[in-house]
Length: 248
Image (cartoon, rainbow, N blue to C red; front, side):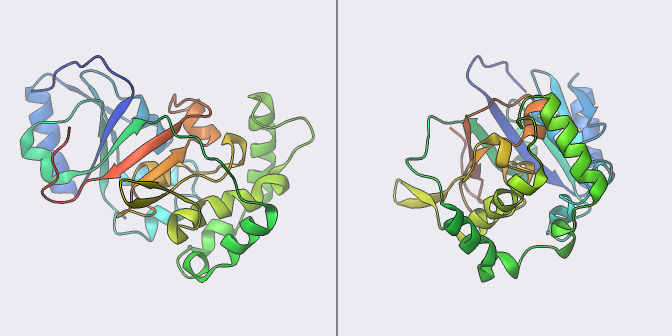
């Protein structure tokens, strides 16, 4: 069963193929748990709450953030369903649990210089793993970013995608290359290397698509704050689950 627990933000991220998802859907319905489908973007699923579990079907990745979703399409998770809950689902679904997201108290002592950002973007670990589509930003998208993020206060008047394009790329690069990390219990954990305004598609780290085997400290992008309800300035601790792991 799912029990309501009063604590800070916590999300459980499951990845399933189509047939396994149908079994989960039927089981949750029998338990009286609502399964809500994300409508436009995967980050909506971060709004999961007590007895409201979100599912992101494969086609949702084609509705918004299509360029950013190219990382999903070239990943091992392409074509899979993502389910996000605020409490751990029954033990029968434990094998599909990939990551647990919680709030952290982390704040970095330093962020990269412009030179450091360029080194990240030019590094082989980024260039050899990024999808080509990811770096093809259309004029329409540039205008959309400028209008939306200016109106919502993430970008200042006069700022544009050009100012943040370097950090958009370098941020994903750091989770692949692990150049900027913090040591947690002997593990070098990479973290987001920009303020929220300079981050794009944080869902790729939050949902364990980029750097899927590594623990990550992730700041939300503007989209995850607007659509997913995440907090500004907070670093979210993403812990991948390996077989045999037990949640605390």
